[in-house]
Image (tube, rainbow, N blue to C red):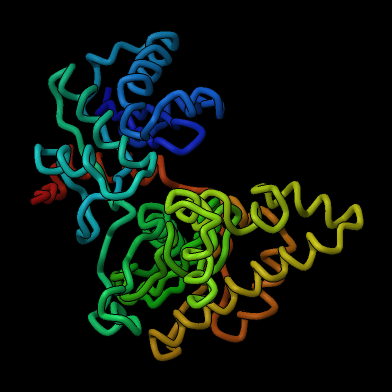
Length: 355
Protein backbone atom coordinates (compact mmCIF):
# COMPACT_ATOMS: atom_id res chain seq x y z
CA UNK A 1 0.00 0.00 0.00
CA UNK A 2 1.34 3.42 -0.96
CA UNK A 3 0.85 6.95 0.26
CA UNK A 4 -2.80 7.90 0.79
CA UNK A 5 -3.36 11.45 -0.45
CA UNK A 6 -6.57 13.45 -0.12
CA UNK A 7 -6.96 16.33 -2.60
CA UNK A 8 -9.56 19.04 -2.01
CA UNK A 9 -10.69 21.65 -4.55
CA UNK A 10 -13.43 24.02 -3.36
CA UNK A 11 -15.32 25.86 -6.09
CA UNK A 12 -18.15 28.36 -6.07
CA UNK A 13 -20.89 25.73 -6.50
CA UNK A 14 -19.14 22.48 -5.59
CA UNK A 15 -16.31 20.89 -3.62
CA UNK A 16 -14.27 18.32 -5.52
CA UNK A 17 -12.61 15.59 -3.47
CA UNK A 18 -10.24 12.92 -4.74
CA UNK A 19 -8.46 10.14 -2.89
CA UNK A 20 -5.27 8.62 -4.26
CA UNK A 21 -3.09 5.65 -3.37
CA UNK A 22 0.21 6.99 -4.67
CA UNK A 23 -0.81 8.15 -8.16
CA UNK A 24 -3.78 5.76 -8.48
CA UNK A 25 -7.13 7.44 -7.97
CA UNK A 26 -9.44 5.54 -5.65
CA UNK A 27 -12.25 8.04 -5.15
CA UNK A 28 -13.51 10.97 -7.23
CA UNK A 29 -16.35 12.90 -5.61
CA UNK A 30 -18.07 16.15 -6.54
CA UNK A 31 -20.13 17.53 -3.68
CA UNK A 32 -22.68 19.95 -5.16
CA UNK A 33 -23.85 23.10 -3.38
CA UNK A 34 -27.11 24.81 -4.29
CA UNK A 35 -27.40 28.58 -4.58
CA UNK A 36 -29.69 28.51 -1.55
CA UNK A 37 -27.11 26.66 0.56
CA UNK A 38 -24.34 29.08 -0.42
CA UNK A 39 -26.58 32.10 0.19
CA UNK A 40 -27.05 30.99 3.81
CA UNK A 41 -23.45 32.04 4.54
CA UNK A 42 -22.64 35.79 4.67
CA UNK A 43 -19.04 35.22 3.52
CA UNK A 44 -17.04 32.43 1.89
CA UNK A 45 -14.94 31.87 5.01
CA UNK A 46 -18.14 31.08 6.95
CA UNK A 47 -18.51 27.91 4.85
CA UNK A 48 -15.35 26.32 6.30
CA UNK A 49 -16.87 24.03 8.92
CA UNK A 50 -19.84 23.15 6.70
CA UNK A 51 -17.68 22.09 3.76
CA UNK A 52 -15.20 20.20 5.95
CA UNK A 53 -17.98 18.24 7.63
CA UNK A 54 -19.49 17.45 4.23
CA UNK A 55 -16.15 16.05 3.03
CA UNK A 56 -15.66 13.91 6.13
CA UNK A 57 -19.23 12.59 5.87
CA UNK A 58 -18.76 11.72 2.19
CA UNK A 59 -15.51 9.85 2.89
CA UNK A 60 -17.13 7.93 5.74
CA UNK A 61 -20.04 6.97 3.48
CA UNK A 62 -17.48 5.59 1.03
CA UNK A 63 -16.01 3.47 3.83
CA UNK A 64 -12.69 5.34 4.02
CA UNK A 65 -11.01 5.90 7.39
CA UNK A 66 -9.22 9.27 7.30
CA UNK A 67 -6.66 7.95 9.79
CA UNK A 68 -5.07 6.14 6.83
CA UNK A 69 -4.10 9.45 5.19
CA UNK A 70 -0.46 10.31 4.54
CA UNK A 71 -1.13 13.94 3.53
CA UNK A 72 -3.92 16.34 2.60
CA UNK A 73 -3.50 18.94 -0.13
CA UNK A 74 -5.92 21.73 -0.97
CA UNK A 75 -6.32 24.16 -3.82
CA UNK A 76 -4.39 27.33 -3.01
CA UNK A 77 -6.32 30.53 -2.40
CA UNK A 78 -5.77 34.27 -2.58
CA UNK A 79 -2.74 34.48 -0.32
CA UNK A 80 0.15 36.88 -0.90
CA UNK A 81 1.86 36.62 -4.31
CA UNK A 82 4.29 33.68 -4.29
CA UNK A 83 6.38 31.65 -6.71
CA UNK A 84 5.05 28.38 -8.07
CA UNK A 85 5.58 25.26 -5.97
CA UNK A 86 4.32 23.24 -3.01
CA UNK A 87 3.82 25.01 0.33
CA UNK A 88 3.08 23.52 3.73
CA UNK A 89 0.10 25.17 5.38
CA UNK A 90 1.43 27.15 8.34
CA UNK A 91 0.05 29.77 10.72
CA UNK A 92 0.94 32.67 8.41
CA UNK A 93 -0.90 31.05 5.53
CA UNK A 94 -3.93 30.23 7.67
CA UNK A 95 -4.09 33.86 8.77
CA UNK A 96 -3.91 35.16 5.20
CA UNK A 97 -6.48 32.68 3.90
CA UNK A 98 -8.86 33.51 6.73
CA UNK A 99 -8.42 37.25 6.20
CA UNK A 100 -8.05 37.28 2.41
CA UNK A 101 -8.70 40.66 0.80
CA UNK A 102 -10.78 39.01 -1.94
CA UNK A 103 -13.45 36.35 -1.50
CA UNK A 104 -13.02 33.14 -3.46
CA UNK A 105 -13.92 29.55 -2.66
CA UNK A 106 -10.28 28.51 -3.22
CA UNK A 107 -9.43 30.31 0.04
CA UNK A 108 -11.04 27.34 1.82
CA UNK A 109 -8.78 24.70 0.23
CA UNK A 110 -5.75 25.07 2.47
CA UNK A 111 -7.87 25.67 5.58
CA UNK A 112 -9.97 22.53 5.11
CA UNK A 113 -6.84 20.52 4.30
CA UNK A 114 -5.12 21.75 7.46
CA UNK A 115 -8.07 20.96 9.70
CA UNK A 116 -8.44 17.41 8.37
CA UNK A 117 -4.67 16.84 8.43
CA UNK A 118 -4.40 18.08 12.03
CA UNK A 119 -7.23 15.76 13.02
CA UNK A 120 -5.28 12.70 11.82
CA UNK A 121 -1.73 13.87 12.55
CA UNK A 122 -0.32 14.46 9.04
CA UNK A 123 0.82 17.52 7.06
CA UNK A 124 -1.32 19.77 4.89
CA UNK A 125 -0.15 21.50 1.70
CA UNK A 126 -1.25 23.75 -1.13
CA UNK A 127 0.35 23.96 -4.58
CA UNK A 128 0.44 26.58 -7.35
CA UNK A 129 -2.30 28.84 -5.98
CA UNK A 130 -4.08 31.36 -8.20
CA UNK A 131 -1.73 34.12 -6.98
CA UNK A 132 1.45 32.50 -8.33
CA UNK A 133 3.51 35.50 -9.44
CA UNK A 134 6.48 35.10 -11.77
CA UNK A 135 5.77 38.18 -13.89
CA UNK A 136 8.59 40.35 -15.19
CA UNK A 137 8.91 43.85 -13.80
CA UNK A 138 7.96 45.35 -17.16
CA UNK A 139 4.73 43.32 -17.27
CA UNK A 140 3.53 44.75 -13.96
CA UNK A 141 3.15 48.31 -15.23
CA UNK A 142 -0.17 49.82 -16.21
CA UNK A 143 -0.76 53.45 -17.11
CA UNK A 144 -1.40 54.38 -13.47
CA UNK A 145 1.12 53.75 -10.65
CA UNK A 146 -1.83 53.19 -8.30
CA UNK A 147 -3.10 50.32 -10.46
CA UNK A 148 -0.30 47.83 -11.19
CA UNK A 149 -1.15 44.70 -13.17
CA UNK A 150 -1.60 41.65 -10.97
CA UNK A 151 -0.93 37.96 -11.52
CA UNK A 152 -4.13 36.07 -10.66
CA UNK A 153 -4.67 33.10 -12.95
CA UNK A 154 -5.37 29.37 -13.10
CA UNK A 155 -1.80 28.50 -12.15
CA UNK A 156 -2.46 24.94 -10.98
CA UNK A 157 -4.19 23.73 -14.14
CA UNK A 158 -2.06 25.82 -16.48
CA UNK A 159 1.23 24.48 -15.15
CA UNK A 160 -0.08 20.92 -14.84
CA UNK A 161 -1.38 20.92 -18.43
CA UNK A 162 1.79 22.54 -19.75
CA UNK A 163 3.88 19.81 -18.10
CA UNK A 164 1.50 17.14 -19.41
CA UNK A 165 1.94 18.46 -22.95
CA UNK A 166 5.73 18.60 -22.61
CA UNK A 167 5.85 15.03 -21.28
CA UNK A 168 3.70 13.92 -24.20
CA UNK A 169 6.09 15.35 -26.79
CA UNK A 170 9.26 14.35 -24.90
CA UNK A 171 10.35 17.86 -23.91
CA UNK A 172 11.15 19.57 -20.62
CA UNK A 173 8.70 22.25 -19.49
CA UNK A 174 11.70 24.35 -18.46
CA UNK A 175 12.99 24.33 -22.06
CA UNK A 176 9.76 25.39 -23.78
CA UNK A 177 7.96 28.63 -24.63
CA UNK A 178 4.21 28.10 -24.40
CA UNK A 179 1.06 30.18 -24.47
CA UNK A 180 -1.54 28.51 -22.25
CA UNK A 181 -5.20 29.55 -22.26
CA UNK A 182 -7.36 28.21 -19.42
CA UNK A 183 -10.98 28.70 -20.45
CA UNK A 184 -13.51 28.14 -17.68
CA UNK A 185 -15.77 30.34 -15.56
CA UNK A 186 -12.83 32.73 -15.74
CA UNK A 187 -10.33 32.86 -18.58
CA UNK A 188 -6.58 33.29 -18.11
CA UNK A 189 -4.03 33.43 -20.92
CA UNK A 190 -0.36 33.24 -19.95
CA UNK A 191 3.14 33.30 -21.38
CA UNK A 192 5.15 30.33 -20.04
CA UNK A 193 8.77 31.14 -20.82
CA UNK A 194 11.22 28.37 -19.91
CA UNK A 195 9.17 27.22 -16.92
CA UNK A 196 8.11 30.64 -15.61
CA UNK A 197 4.88 32.54 -16.26
CA UNK A 198 6.35 35.89 -17.23
CA UNK A 199 3.00 37.52 -18.04
CA UNK A 200 -0.68 36.75 -17.54
CA UNK A 201 -3.99 38.51 -17.03
CA UNK A 202 -5.81 38.98 -13.75
CA UNK A 203 -8.57 36.50 -14.54
CA UNK A 204 -10.55 37.19 -11.38
CA UNK A 205 -11.57 40.84 -11.57
CA UNK A 206 -8.96 42.61 -13.61
CA UNK A 207 -8.27 42.24 -17.30
CA UNK A 208 -8.08 39.90 -20.25
CA UNK A 209 -10.84 38.24 -22.29
CA UNK A 210 -14.37 38.37 -20.97
CA UNK A 211 -15.50 34.97 -19.73
CA UNK A 212 -18.72 33.16 -18.83
CA UNK A 213 -19.01 35.09 -15.54
CA UNK A 214 -16.28 37.77 -15.68
CA UNK A 215 -16.08 41.08 -17.47
CA UNK A 216 -12.38 41.04 -18.32
CA UNK A 217 -10.92 44.24 -19.77
CA UNK A 218 -13.58 46.95 -20.10
CA UNK A 219 -13.32 50.60 -21.20
CA UNK A 220 -11.98 52.45 -18.16
CA UNK A 221 -13.82 55.71 -18.77
CA UNK A 222 -17.17 53.97 -19.06
CA UNK A 223 -16.49 52.04 -15.85
CA UNK A 224 -15.81 55.33 -14.04
CA UNK A 225 -19.16 56.64 -15.30
CA UNK A 226 -20.90 53.54 -13.94
CA UNK A 227 -19.15 53.92 -10.59
CA UNK A 228 -20.46 57.47 -10.15
CA UNK A 229 -23.87 57.01 -11.76
CA UNK A 230 -25.54 56.44 -8.41
CA UNK A 231 -27.19 53.29 -9.73
CA UNK A 232 -24.82 50.77 -8.19
CA UNK A 233 -23.11 50.06 -4.89
CA UNK A 234 -19.47 49.03 -4.70
CA UNK A 235 -20.61 45.46 -4.10
CA UNK A 236 -22.86 45.62 -7.19
CA UNK A 237 -19.96 46.75 -9.37
CA UNK A 238 -17.60 44.11 -8.00
CA UNK A 239 -20.22 41.50 -8.84
CA UNK A 240 -20.52 42.90 -12.36
CA UNK A 241 -16.79 42.38 -12.80
CA UNK A 242 -16.76 38.83 -11.41
CA UNK A 243 -19.93 36.79 -11.15
CA UNK A 244 -22.42 38.70 -13.29
CA UNK A 245 -20.19 39.86 -16.14
CA UNK A 246 -19.25 38.31 -19.47
CA UNK A 247 -21.69 35.84 -21.01
CA UNK A 248 -24.03 36.18 -18.02
CA UNK A 249 -24.32 39.92 -18.58
CA UNK A 250 -24.87 39.60 -22.33
CA UNK A 251 -26.91 36.41 -22.56
CA UNK A 252 -28.05 35.44 -19.06
CA UNK A 253 -26.17 32.13 -18.99
CA UNK A 254 -22.69 31.00 -17.97
CA UNK A 255 -22.92 27.71 -19.90
CA UNK A 256 -21.07 27.84 -23.21
CA UNK A 257 -22.52 24.45 -24.13
CA UNK A 258 -26.07 25.72 -23.57
CA UNK A 259 -25.36 28.92 -25.49
CA UNK A 260 -23.96 27.01 -28.47
CA UNK A 261 -27.18 24.99 -28.49
CA UNK A 262 -29.02 28.32 -28.67
CA UNK A 263 -26.82 29.34 -31.60
CA UNK A 264 -27.62 26.09 -33.40
CA UNK A 265 -31.32 26.78 -32.79
CA UNK A 266 -31.02 30.14 -34.54
CA UNK A 267 -30.05 32.60 -31.76
CA UNK A 268 -27.90 35.02 -33.76
CA UNK A 269 -27.04 37.26 -30.79
CA UNK A 270 -25.66 34.29 -28.85
CA UNK A 271 -23.48 33.49 -31.85
CA UNK A 272 -22.11 37.04 -31.99
CA UNK A 273 -21.24 37.06 -28.27
CA UNK A 274 -19.59 33.61 -28.34
CA UNK A 275 -17.51 34.75 -31.32
CA UNK A 276 -16.61 37.94 -29.46
CA UNK A 277 -15.36 35.94 -26.47
CA UNK A 278 -13.35 33.69 -28.79
CA UNK A 279 -11.99 36.78 -30.57
CA UNK A 280 -10.82 38.23 -27.24
CA UNK A 281 -9.13 34.95 -26.29
CA UNK A 282 -7.34 34.94 -29.65
CA UNK A 283 -6.13 38.51 -29.16
CA UNK A 284 -4.80 37.62 -25.70
CA UNK A 285 -2.92 34.64 -27.15
CA UNK A 286 -1.32 36.97 -29.68
CA UNK A 287 -0.32 39.38 -26.91
CA UNK A 288 1.34 36.61 -24.91
CA UNK A 289 3.19 35.46 -28.02
CA UNK A 290 4.53 39.02 -28.32
CA UNK A 291 5.65 38.85 -24.67
CA UNK A 292 8.02 36.06 -25.79
CA UNK A 293 9.12 37.91 -28.95
CA UNK A 294 7.07 35.56 -31.10
CA UNK A 295 9.13 32.53 -30.08
CA UNK A 296 6.33 30.10 -29.20
CA UNK A 297 6.65 26.31 -29.32
CA UNK A 298 2.96 25.58 -28.77
CA UNK A 299 -0.40 27.11 -27.84
CA UNK A 300 -2.31 25.03 -25.29
CA UNK A 301 -6.08 25.30 -24.83
CA UNK A 302 -7.52 23.83 -21.63
CA UNK A 303 -10.45 24.19 -19.23
CA UNK A 304 -14.10 23.28 -19.65
CA UNK A 305 -14.74 25.58 -22.61
CA UNK A 306 -12.14 23.63 -24.61
CA UNK A 307 -14.80 20.91 -24.98
CA UNK A 308 -16.75 23.26 -27.26
CA UNK A 309 -15.65 22.81 -30.87
CA UNK A 310 -16.88 26.18 -32.24
CA UNK A 311 -14.71 28.09 -29.74
CA UNK A 312 -11.66 25.92 -30.38
CA UNK A 313 -12.13 26.18 -34.14
CA UNK A 314 -12.39 29.97 -33.97
CA UNK A 315 -9.15 30.22 -31.96
CA UNK A 316 -7.37 27.80 -34.28
CA UNK A 317 -8.37 29.89 -37.31
CA UNK A 318 -7.01 33.06 -35.71
CA UNK A 319 -3.91 31.77 -33.92
CA UNK A 320 -2.50 28.71 -35.71
CA UNK A 321 -0.08 30.97 -37.60
CA UNK A 322 1.71 31.59 -34.29
CA UNK A 323 2.43 27.99 -33.27
CA UNK A 324 0.87 24.50 -33.25
CA UNK A 325 -2.25 24.30 -31.10
CA UNK A 326 -2.81 21.48 -28.61
CA UNK A 327 -6.19 20.99 -26.93
CA UNK A 328 -6.58 19.42 -23.46
CA UNK A 329 -10.24 19.86 -22.47
CA UNK A 330 -11.23 19.98 -18.83
CA UNK A 331 -9.00 20.42 -15.83
CA UNK A 332 -6.13 18.38 -14.42
CA UNK A 333 -6.25 20.05 -11.01
CA UNK A 334 -6.91 17.02 -8.80
CA UNK A 335 -4.11 15.02 -10.42
CA UNK A 336 -1.84 18.05 -10.18
CA UNK A 337 -2.55 18.42 -6.47
CA UNK A 338 -1.85 14.73 -5.92
CA UNK A 339 1.45 14.82 -7.83
CA UNK A 340 2.62 17.85 -5.85
CA UNK A 341 1.88 16.09 -2.56
CA UNK A 342 3.45 12.84 -3.75
CA UNK A 343 6.83 14.38 -4.62
CA UNK A 344 6.95 15.83 -1.10
CA UNK A 345 6.03 12.53 0.54
CA UNK A 346 8.67 10.71 -1.52
CA UNK A 347 11.29 13.28 -0.53
CA UNK A 348 11.88 14.36 -4.12
CA UNK A 349 11.36 18.00 -3.16
CA UNK A 350 11.15 19.99 0.07
CA UNK A 351 8.01 22.09 0.44
CA UNK A 352 8.47 25.83 0.40
CA UNK A 353 7.80 27.99 3.45
CA UNK A 354 5.07 30.60 3.23
CA UNK A 355 6.05 33.78 5.05
